[in-house]
Image (cartoon, rainbow, N blue to C red; front, top):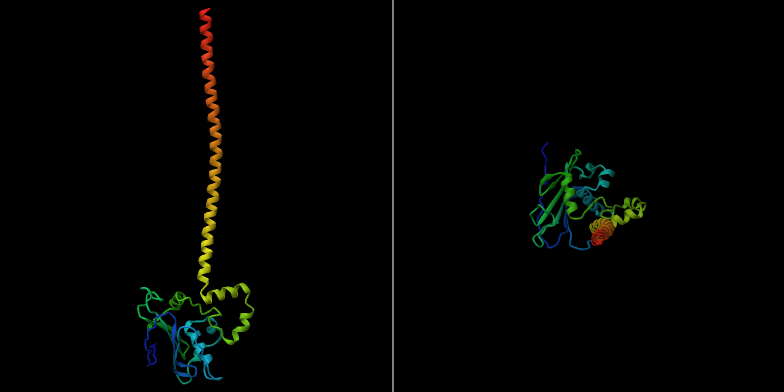
Length: 250
């Protein structure tokens, strides 16, 4: 089945830091077309009840592929009434810094991720307007340190109670992941494992050295006994010759 695309396209902008710089909604829920520009740092979306604030958060969840969102609702219901196709587009800054881009493999300064929703229940992703797999989207988000299934990344109102019963250690893991500390913790744990391995190897080497020293001490003692025995035998041989010579003289 041939896919129909909304006619409006997004503009590419450039910036100097890696962050989500714009959200574009097309035929999504109550929005026919809306662009929400974002800046680096804290962004606050304000408005009266029913103005569509929650729809923006929901659009983010859908575009990022949050499992909770896909499990809790029928995505085709998010297509604007009277339309057959909706699109949520996220624009990420991908400006090169020191010769490296935040998203490897994509050479444009603005990286475009889109999620399409059809009224007939079919959905797909596109990167740079080319269809891609969910696995590729997950890989890209991971390269940015984004896990949409982390409740501290995107938390809907009805997720608060669910978060409250999460065990403390899992909450800590979520917090570390959300603020970007999980990578450092992983590196620390890996360094600790390497240190333990080195200490274990050192312990083995010290044990081998101790055994070698004991072996050396044993053979050193055996050598000294052998030399003493050799000297005694030589002295005995000398005395026997002297005794034989004394009998000849008599």
